[in-house]
Length: 224
Length: 178
Image (spheres, rainbow over the protein chains, first blue to last red):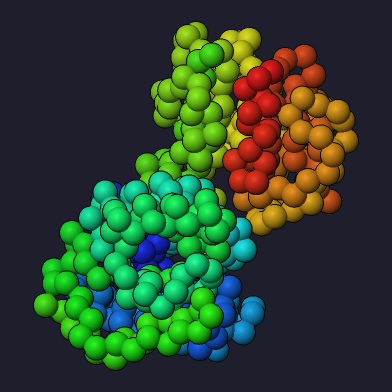
């Protein structure tokens, strides 16, 4: 089956894409570039660098801008999925949705209306199992946004590896956070994986941080 | 306790979404997952309970195998059908399936005391088909729009048109304990 992946460049949508590619042909990456940093639907930090990921994966990307206003952003998502269906003849959509019925309901409705299959291979996966699966799948990602205690400035740009996973699991008990960031505690960007032809290297970046909230502004990055 | 989990997914990738969340809930018990195309009269012999899982909204291939599922009704084993499994347990007793779509979290009211769930609750629905009038089943719970939870009048056969593995896991654990 030819599939399009709703792709933010973060660990969840990337992992969903990699799992889908083991059984189907991933024809395109669908990316929403939202100007609303607090969107409930779409992951926003470092979205501009998904172009390099698409290049390294050798998979075409379609980008749709949205102002990220509730409901209007769904119209933009519908436009994006329609474009993918028309341009790449996809038969289904893959998402990295884990637990949010808000997100999954809206995407399921769009797919159903367009006669497309909808695959959510991470659905209901526990936060710990998701982190373990990322490591087992040799997916390297860095933290590009934080929004919860106890994440201090040192977490911006930190790579999610087996050591970080242990730390996140400890934090989940002590601070009652979701260790894989499902509640928006942090955002990530995948920089390398077995499917990448070249690794994405961050050449220059700036940390913006205040009171357990921050983002990593990537100023320059390239494939090496 | 040995549970037979029947996947109704035509595409293996859908099993991550519709089967694995259920086996995660029952992982402390022994279970096997079998494909809907393998269902026959002998398949239930070595099991104590049967769960028939749901599948993707676009996936209707299981409808081609309804006759095979009818053999399960004489197995005398408790069965829980979820979403497409709900339609399958209804079809096992020749109930009429109708087109009726519900997608999302929906308020459900319990109408009859039952061993699976008590009171009102919110349920994650994702179906294009449902039932309207039932002959062999009692309606245990319903939303404003559809019948949501049913039990057979004489057998321990249940159906949930929603997905209890999302936010209502106790329905599955209660079924296992019946």
